[in-house]
Image (cartoon, rainbow, N blue to C red; front, side):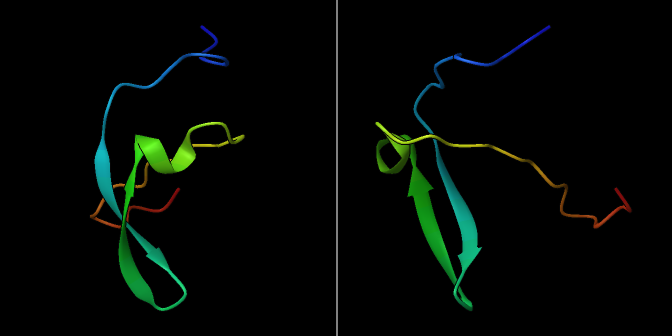
Length: 46
């Protein structure tokens, strides 16, 4: 099942960027190519 080209609903998540935590929303990614990767908080080896 391919999800390429699928539109995401509204979201707000925390991200770590340049040594600080920032909020990212769907509006920040609008009109840009994006790859969304989820990594669980328990730091299991991937």
